[in-house]
Length: 351
Image 1 (tube, one colour):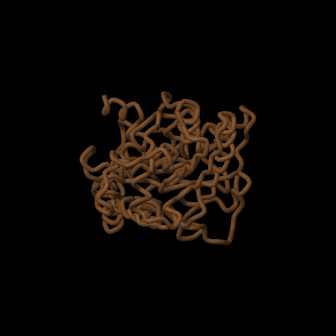
Image 2 (cartoon, rainbow, N blue to C red; image 1 turned 90 degrees about the vertical axis):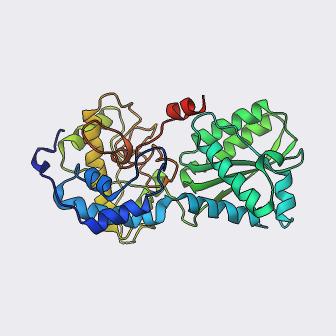
Image 3 (cartoon, rainbow, N blue to C red; image 1 turned 30 degrees about the vertical axis):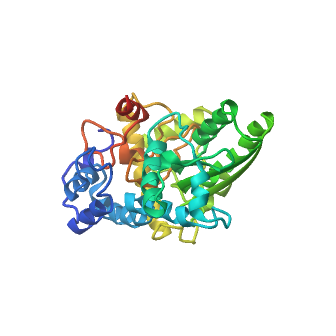
């Protein structure tokens, strides 16, 4: 691998750190891939410089304690919503969910159908209702997913539904997701435009798991919750990628240092460590894997010419492609910590 020649020796990782991280992600794609053990963690971390492996594990543990969403955490979130009088607007929750219309309209992947199946378990436990049996002409509509980043997918899914479905003139739509980034703010206005063009009036309410304001907008990058580097590392692969962005007319936009401790990071120093190491390794992976599409960027999938989205939210069912690629891109010469199930693989499993 390019840029790694001086770091090929095997480093004995702190076993407590490796075990801790493995416990945090122990239910990741359970039953689909081999268990995420301490041995897997230790093998994966070897692709980073030896002196920074333990600090990286420590930083990632602190983040994943807040951002890794286990199945039980997701189920608890859905259970709270099933019992909430806020979402039912004061009505009896059971009667409210009896009339609710649960949408299954996602075009790619299995995330919506998987979350709906989990919500079915919740409704049966809480209200003795089956998801297949709820719904009515005057009920609210619900779009469920595990994560919404830029909002492109949810916008296209719902816009297509608004265009094709036989809907009432007044639409009460709720978007429920474990993770919602601020950069998806624009979808509400776009969906209202689509509804208005169809002669419909739509009200949109969003619900998410945490109270964190997931900031990923460029104008607020100095307080970004995503990985957004403060500097371009003195690394050959990174310098080459930065130059490529400049040639495209989009030189890298950096954030400035901040004294504030950003949300779920332990401190600013750990956030900068994650940004630097994941950026360097991500650029190396891109150099060594020419098959990767341009929008699979070092810090995660993004349609814009940049270093990448930089999310660190992962759920038990999959690793979003907007996370740093050193977490999920599978390579022949190294162990992958969070192998990602692609939309194509999901479609094959449904066939």
